[in-house]
Image (cartoon, rainbow, N blue to C red; front, side, top):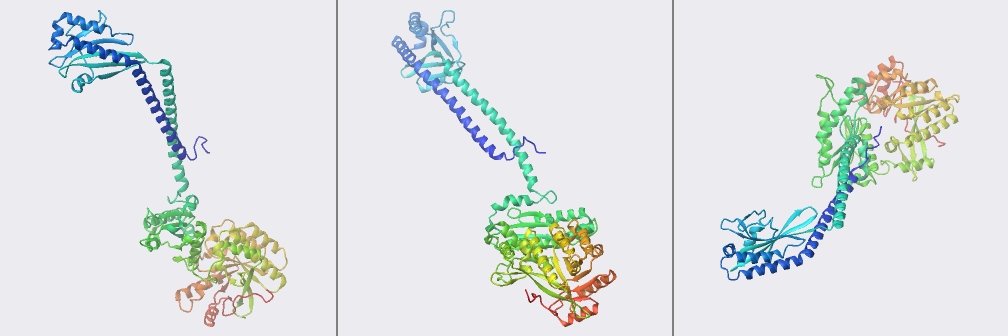
Length: 634
């Protein structure tokens, strides 16, 4: 359930909030400075006359003392002089001037009264001590100029003026005036409201900012979870989708890595062991790459994507990283319990020039083609995509394949499958071909890698089925085998086509279905049930490329296989490789016990045929008998 209060992407809002807060703080500081300027202006205007009067009073006192040689002592001794000075000070107090007094500093540095213009009940006596609380009382003796002391009084502007009175250029007396005026209430209220409003907004903004920061922490945690694979703790496919538009293809080489026979590991040892293998593979890759430069992504299932940073100084370093990944996995022991371990291998496809592709998706396709080729070559190998192959060796693009379908340039070549004893044609295998606009014939190895996992592969299958169905209608004596990929077996539209063909007389029993023997056929749901259903409709089930990889003998009996085709890479080596010969011999022995027929692929010489015949293999297919070709009317 989604939290409705959770902000999906608060990081940008935090930046905006910080900017707004900064503006508000600057506004508050500006308001405070405005208040200070207003107060200073009010003070300047209000005190202009007071300062002039005070200076005149200081001059008057200086004139009264012009015959004195010791100001403090003379004033203390001369009552008449005291009275004159006090009279001169008594004219100073007004509504705004509260106090006026004359002080001196004794030899101990203590300030004392000489005259005071206060009311009789507040008047200080001569030589009474005066306590000071500001250093400017002492600064006046050094600076020999008027000092201003501002007091912090609520609703008032309060100032003490200290005016020096000199004798022979030394400060002997200080005339002190305490001056205060009421602040202008309206201005003060307005500024006060402004400050309070701005402060309130700042507080609310800061609270909002704190909430945003908390939400951001949650957001980043959720985002990390969304972009990290729960099992292996490396990046997942979501991260790749987010990143792919921003990947600079000039900076990386691209590799796809697939764990060989992973389904077999799961089936043999259980999914818990399979999960541990995945985690250890991911950890081994992480330890092998350069964490600051390279990126590892679990693309799905047992497939990983590697983006390895290219070093301009060491252009081969990126390939060395992938080689290190491959070697470290080969050398690692993957324990299934405390004592026993298994060896796990991987196949890797590399695109060393992803920058030549229009986008990441196209670059990834080329790496995937290289992975496809690595698997076809027996797995446990690294294959680099070769962009320099000519048109006869180069894969078609998806658009070229689509155009071929639209232009009806999808055709079939047929290769004979002969009876080993009679040497008569038993079946034909339909082999996909595409005719280019230039008339070149393109084989499946340049077609299938590009459309793997796309809807186009399903449509190609439909085209081949349609061609073969029409061929069976034309010639009611021949039998044709068609190749189905594992996804076809679970696709409703393909199954419906085959069901409709089975309603036609003498079709299903002449249309053999060849399914590649690999782990994919074991993974897909309903594959076994669908194969049994098709067999019940009259179709013969052939398992193709048997012995090249998975070789699940039990599965053959479960789906009631009619025939298995031993992979050509094994048949080609039975004359020179004892292991290949023993493997074929074992398969033949099992098949005979299970009442399953056998076809030997890639029978390309008389010597191989003779060996196959000795082994008791019922059917042969290969260049020794015929090359794939179109029927004459095609």
